[in-house]
Image (cartoon, rainbow, N blue to C red; front, top):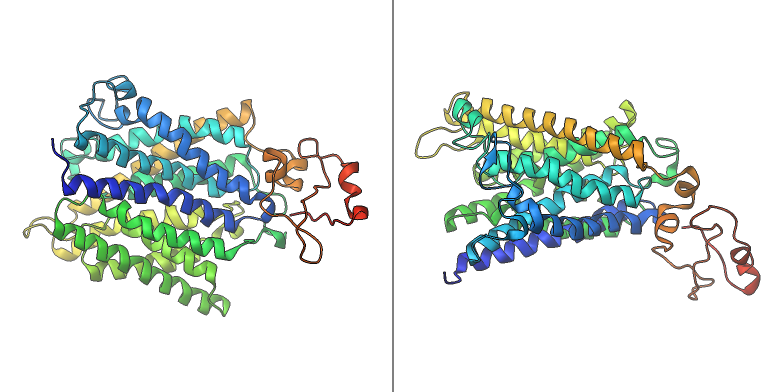
Length: 443
């Protein structure tokens, strides 16, 4: 098979989606405290490494092909991609799918910032991708339960999830909530003012990279130029409207719009348009964006009222806007040649029931499976760092490095931690540093 323009586009789209995970690292890294920035970024980067290996070995096989009870594919059918046709079409699609699995699990990490063991996270990633992400991807995209030939698809009609409302965002948002409830809140949650973002420019940069990559995220699976054009416009319109909706909400509620709100609003709009990008008109995308921006802006505050420490608002943004984007298709999905569509297009309740079923089953499946995995890790090796390690900062305690170096009077100087990174005990050598003309500063 010759390489075509379509193949090249999917390769470019896959590269854009892969770039989103380093963008997420900046987005999340800027939202944490300074002494946890590197750890937060590493949780995204290690996800690339681990999932990249898992996908080649068994992940791709589990998410497509012949399946078990329409729930999951056979991991041994093409283990290590052996037996897969080495055509541009097959391999490019596998690579494109891998980037979705990578960023989905990376999204979860923001909910447990500042307090999770890096080793425990590194175990969680491959297990969760194998037991949660791959089955759900198979059910929605791989010919499983929700497909046209699946049991639920035949009974209710196929659910629409063009680019990952259920598989990516609802899945990640539910998993994030479960992890928070099992691991617990950060020390001083809701009381310590130092839990604020330490680098808003990083957050803005990360949001910009995410928006840039999202055109590949949504548009990579386009089958025609007309569909690709619609997806591009919708991927512009929804986050733009969501950002405005979020900022207006902040202005009314808090008296001022914020840079963090602008960045978060963009992400909320991107999340909401993901499942709907090829199936709504631009006007529908604008309306969907506004609703997602306002709803997520209000939802992120619920963690303080309800007492769960979703550190970087994964639940408030990805779960809430993911549900909104998925269920909204029951109202605003376009009809195809006058057939089907949402309630507003005369399609009746058929699409609505399909969307509600997809969202509900995705929530239940992700919650149950994530709880089993996380509880097992937490009760064996432990998922949470010690109090001493949390106080010192997970960058020092887990990685023996820091994101920043601090000097005196503008001169460069080595960062001298006042505590041993592992034991948390005082370090006499570090304590002498100020007498030698250097200043120790806790990040």
